[in-house]
Length: 338
Ligand code: UDP
Ligand code: MG
Image 1: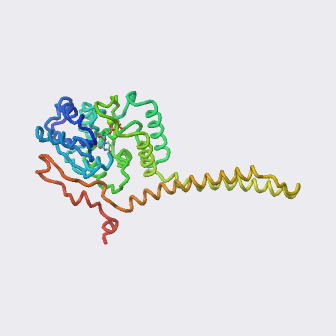
Image 2 (image 1 turned 90 degrees about the horizontal axis):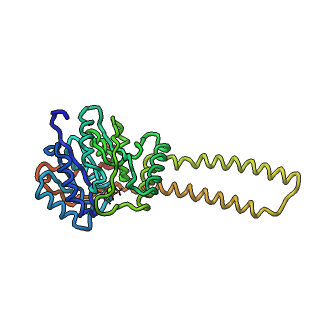
Image 3 (image 1 turned 45 degrees about the horizontal axis):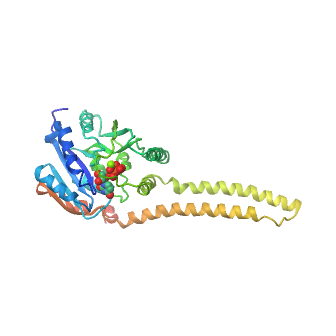
C-alpha cells in the first residue's frame, strides 16, 4: 500500500438487520485493522421495521466513523445503495452487505489493487456459490449469460455482485445517472473504466434471512434486462416477418389446392391452431410492450429515487452534502437549460 493518504467509505444498506449490525462492525474492526484510520462506514437504513436504527445509533455512540442515513421508508436495496453513494465521502467506495456474505478481508486486496493505480474498479467474483441453492445458482448463471448476449453495450462480469471497490470518479459517474430503475450492477458496469475481478468464496448469511424471494429476484432480473436492452421490443418485427413468410407459402398452397381440387369445407382444426397461435404471439408481444411502457411511466414521473428522513453521526455535524442536489434530480427542462 502506498503512503499516499486516502480514505475508504463502506456503504452498507440495511433492512431489518438488527442482529447483524454489531457482528458486522466487529468483523470490520478485526479484519480491516490496517485501514482503521481511513475508514468511514455509511449505513443506510432502508425503512427497517425492527430495531436496526437503534442498533446503528448505539454503534455511532461508540464509533465516530459511523454515519446513519435514515430513509423515509423502504425504497429497496438499489435505491438505498444510491443514497449511500450520495453520502459517501471516501476516495474509494465499497458497497457491501451487512450479513458478512461479502468478506471484509477481501477489501484489503481491493485496496491494494486500486492503489497500484491501474484500476478504477476492483470487483469480487463469487467463485464458489455452494452457499446458494442449486436453483439460485442455475438461474443466476443463466441470467448473466442472457444479459450479456442481449446487451452488447454493457457486459456484466459473470458472478460479480455489488461487492466491489470503486474509485471516486466511478462514483461521481454513477451519481450522474438519473434513472429510477436502478439495476446497480448494470450501472456499475456501464461506466466502463478500468476494472479487474478478484475471486472469493461467498459464505452463507451470518444471521437473519435473505430479503429476496424468487418472485423478487425474477422482477429484479426483468428490471435489469429491460433497462439495458431494447432487443425484446424489436424482436417482434422479425417474428412478424417470419410468420408472414410462412403464412404466404401456406396461402399459395391453399389457393393452388382450391383451383385444382375445389373447396374443402373441413378446416376447423387448422383454422383454430392458426388463430390460437397468432393470438398467443400477439399477446406476448403486447405484454413486452407493456413492460417497457410501465417502466417509461415510472421514469417519466421523475420522482426522487429515495427520501432521506435524516443523517446521523459525526459526519452529519460536519459538512453535509447539498441535500438539494440529492433530492432534486435535474428535470428534463433543467437539462435543456430552459
Ligand atoms: N436490503 C436493503 N433493502 C431491501 C432489501 C435488502 O437495504 O429492501 C439490504 C440487506 O439488509 C442486506 C443487503 O441489502 O444488507 C443484501 O440483502 P440480502 O442479504 O437479503 O440479499 P442476498 O444476499 O440474499 O442476495
Ligand atoms: Mg445476503
